[in-house]
Length: 348
Ligand SMILES: C=CC1=C(C)c2cc3[nH]c(cc4nc(cc5[nH]c(cc1n2)c(C)c5CCC(=O)O)C(CCC(=O)O)=C4C)c(C)c3C=C
Ligand SMILES: [Fe+2]
Ligand SMILES: [Fe+2]
Image 1 (cartoon, rainbow, N blue to C red):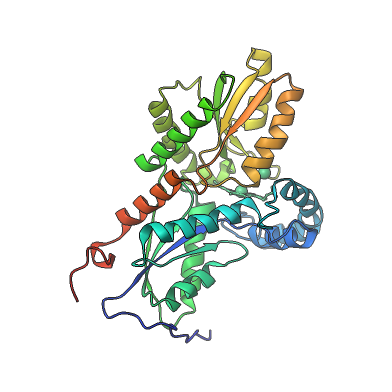
Image 2: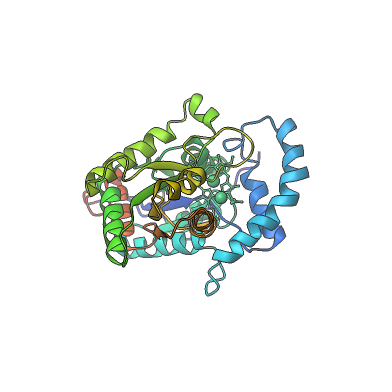
């Protein structure tokens, strides 16, 4: 392998410099067939996401999935696209989180953002930080709950990008934060504010997390345990029972069994039990995205009304709100070794 011999465009200070890299999943560049196909092709070729042997999976992916799914997903992305920014909400919020975090952390910590799939890549974000003289990187995958399919593959991609560099920065990866007090405080505030803005009172606050194939859990992925930790802490903060705030899992993909209970059948069964007004919160996502805005906000709302429901409201994700930036700021400061922190490191 040829190594990348790039040197920073700005010299590294003698005491070193720490950069912050926040990373999210990634999203298509546009809603057209080929943009969505490119994105799904990269995402669904990741062996952390689909573990089936490539010899079996790639013919199915290339032959069926990537000829049919991009049109359907493209229509869904079109329904939620941010037309002012000409970008998907996930990109808009991740970029804004990085911009606001950079202001919050000050000039001592340069901030970059990267996506596991698509653009800007994690490798580009590493390069951006190194060009600002960073020789140390704090890496924060923006997933509240750990999963090998999200957190671990983001870390893999960071290390993959370092594999090619002759001049490697030191890195510190920041773990998932399922019941970190700053996360729970942000969620609690967003629920209280959202419910106060309604002219009606939801009978249930359904928590819907992104799903995961059950096989991953059987093999040791502890994502559902992390989801339970988030929910136990949030129920406690809001003083709600398991019945008032049930847990469900959405976004099932493919024919395999996923972690249960599934959100859609759970929610569409509520009206026949006399529950016709609900709020849905999605604490598995830091930022609103296709899964929250379209799958729940459009598709599930439609199915709930068809089943006899009257009201379904979404509690927004933290997105780029002040509590979101408080959370990221806290996670970074807690994970930063004292000698990496320009505010606490001794004089040179
Ligand atoms: C086997 C397939 C998938 C697994 C496993 C999976 C895990 C997983 N994903 C997220 C977070 C997000 N997923 C998003 C979109 C999305 N997810 C899958 C499939 C799997 N996810 C697909 C095919 C898609 C694309 C959309 C579609 O075609 O339906 C997103 C949103 C991206 C956006 O652009 O808005 C997020 C975020 C988690 C947290 C997770 C495991 C716990
Ligand atoms: Fe997903
Ligand atoms: Fe989905």
